[in-house]
Amino acid sequence: MGALLRDGATRHLLLSGGLNVHAPETLWGELDRNRAYLLAKSGATAAAYHLLMELLRTKITIVPVEALRENIGDALARLGPKNSLDAPYLAAAIAIGGTLWSHDKRFSRTAQVPTVRTRDVLAYLGI
Image 1 (cartoon, one colour):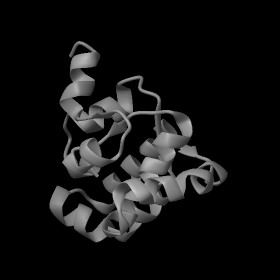
Image 2 (cartoon, rainbow, N blue to C red; image 1 turned 90 degrees about the horizontal axis):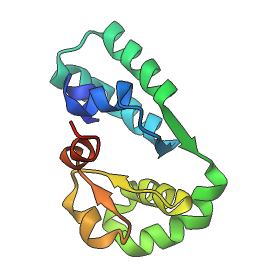
Image 3 (cartoon, rainbow, N blue to C red; image 1 turned 60 degrees about the horizontal axis):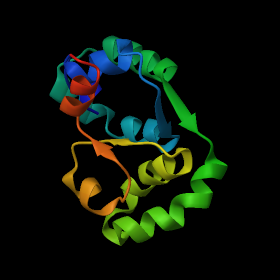
């Protein structure tokens, strides 16, 4: 969501950082459900928002549903029932052996997978 809210480091990293970013298919539904909020908060026009969404779709690889199904139980167990909306993201990270990029401190405490913030990604890239 950070990439849609402001023209900052997260957006630039996603669009031109050369990163190998993966997400569950649920990402697009979450962004669609929050479209009105994101438009209002960002001040973007509907056309600019749509264009940015299309660009993000070209930069983010979707983790196959089968891989999520295999790991969703583990993700739910780690995060607990109150955080079930975040479970697909953790299941995706487990499935591909990836690192979570999140500003949610709960992930670093409970996810049991490597977790980074934007500043960590910038530091890794030497930016």
